[in-house]
Amino acid sequence: MLRLAECVLTFPETIKVHPEMGSVFHGAVMERIKADSAELYHHMTLRPYSQAVYWDAERRLPVWRLGFLTDEAYERIFQPISSCHSLHLKQKGIDVQLGKFTIIKETDYEKLAKQYIRQETAPGGAVWHIRTVMSFKKDGRYVILPDIRLIYQSLLQRWNTFSPETRLEEDSLLDQLTNHCQLTRYQLRSQTFSVNGSTIYGCSGQMHYRFFGFDMLKRIQGILTAFAPYAGVGVKTALGMGSVNTTID
Image (tube, rainbow, N blue to C red; front, side, top):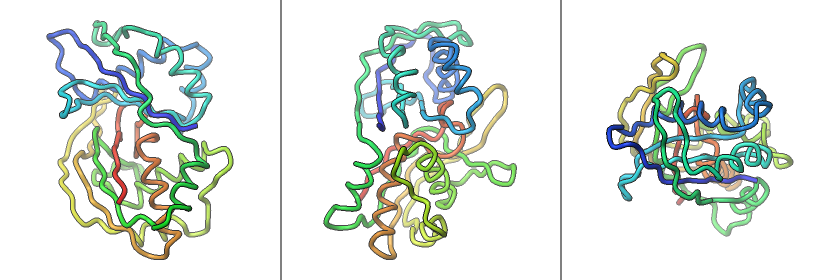
């Protein structure tokens, strides 16, 4: 199953909310869950969850978002965390109050794929809202701008790693997706994200994409775009980076 959960956060008055707190929240989560679970995820290159702290401008509230790509991750992480009323952030020396968690989206890989394969008209494009700093790594270096090839590569890796049955592994699929998706508008700003004393450069903001090419290719673009909020995109998605919302046309 794919699940996306959120809760409202209440910080001490002297604390300013910042997306970089995602890495601190991740540390607090690892301390709360069972030791064998924390050890398991520590050694994973791709983790079956994402999480991020962000400021919801519409509600004017700080929000904690958790995305789960497997039932096991949901059971190991969300079930113990969702029963907590507060979370102690050791690095900050503070306690943060947790509101009631809400599952805002829930589906499974097969249902998500069928939704876009079976709908009457293939999607024509999408709008991406990057909520927390998005960055990528290529040839050992960080890539600041959200290159569409790196976006799809990130999503395909996570989909094909954690989907129990439905795979998106056709030959040259990544090339086809990249060549048939056009950036039409954007409003981006460069930002940094600090993790364990290291600074990662990336960006946040909004992007508009147009899908073209043959019908099934546009449907796969729709599937991956809908998958993105659960998975996060790019590097350090478990530590608070690459959280996105997407709207598919």
